[in-house]
Image (cartoon, rainbow, N blue to C red; front, side, top):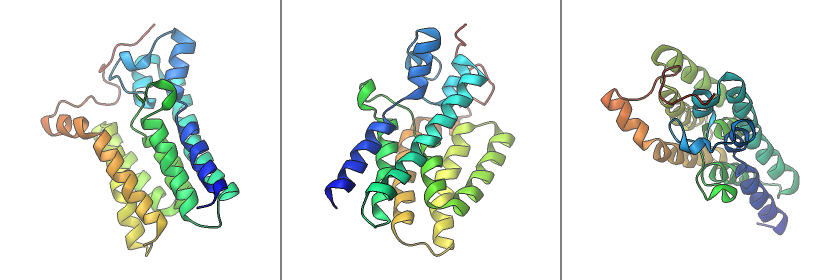
Length: 204
């Protein structure tokens, strides 16, 4: 890997470390969102704590982080599919463990959407649609998130992808399941907060 590729990966991590939910909560309400609601620095908890508008903004910005990381890897990295893929992983790691916020971040799903949609649009689209249907039916955002990351590598295999993009999706899947391990237990116990429920106190 060349020096420019290493620089691209580092920049991707630093970009991913910009936790927009934390920044927005501090800007709008002067609070640390990680001390409210579920304690997660992501769009879903932003919805619970700050409302729809800020949540949509956080979602969009977090997705854009993933897209930007991939295109950064394609722009200044080597002529290899591995460089943008690693840049995408670095952005997700940054989101999950941000250097600017004491390594306490979110669960990386929105950034994962940006990464995987940029690397493999069709499998990501199919997995995303299934995830959305799941969320509409069950109102479990965490279940939809896990379906997205779990189905993407399977669909890539079905479509004949066995290279960097498949392995990237598999690594991301492992990350996501690890970050959602408490959610998985709560879903099994029927204790997981549903979308729109009062799982966290709204800051007014």
